[in-house]
Amino acid sequence: MLLNELARTSGTSTASIKYYRRQGLLPPGRRLTATRFDYGREHLERLALIRALRELAHAPIEDIRTLTTVIDEGRPLVKALEIAQAIATGLPARLHEEPPPEGEDPRVAELVEAMGWADVGSGPRVALDRLLGTMGAEGVASDLPTLLRYARPLEEIAREDLAGIRSAPQSTPGATADGHSPSTDAIVRQALIGSLAFTQLTVVLRALAHASVSLEVGAEEGQTGPHGAHH
Image (cartoon, rainbow, N blue to C red; front, side):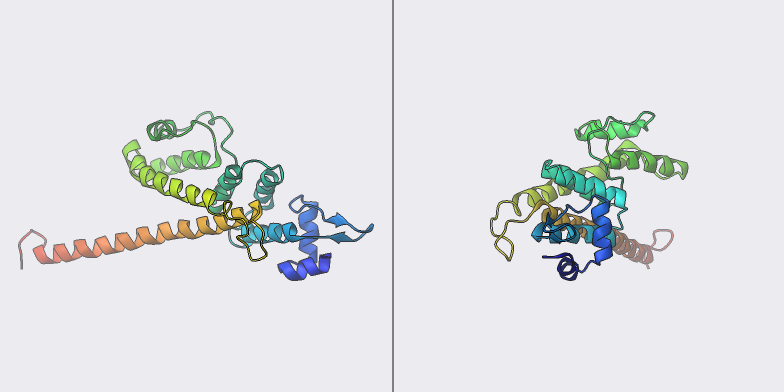
């Protein structure tokens, strides 16, 4: 398809498509003439991914470039999913390949060791270091037992999420409507959307649980009165 058809089919303006090409986010089409290019399914899927990153995750161009570069280099899917997960949660789009930062809060390394996680740097690790500093300054509990209370169930959820993403889409040839296996772009887009949804679900369920427990405590206090006497 030509540029105008690509724009119409993808719901992306021609100006945006040209901008994404200049930024290295969209691979070039097959050259037909000096000014005309042929675009295919891979371009539609890349534009769908970029649109989700921009409109749903509000990701900056730099983070999108980090993700698309990993995809275009043909690196393992798990690397692209790492970055997509970071972007979905508003964290720096960095791979888990850098050394831990100097001057890091020691509680981060303690948590990593207690959980048996790889002792490497990452965007989420940097974010945790900063968050612990803020929590400490505000007097919010952030000792190792508190961190473990949250980390353990979330690790189990993360393992189940990754297992589902890695097994289902790639093992089903002809899973798409046109008979093609899902591309890396399509898999990462679906993972991104799922991560955004489940991040919000975690927040909402926690708030619902707090509200429900508060009602239970309120009902118990109403029954016993301020000094524990039953009415």
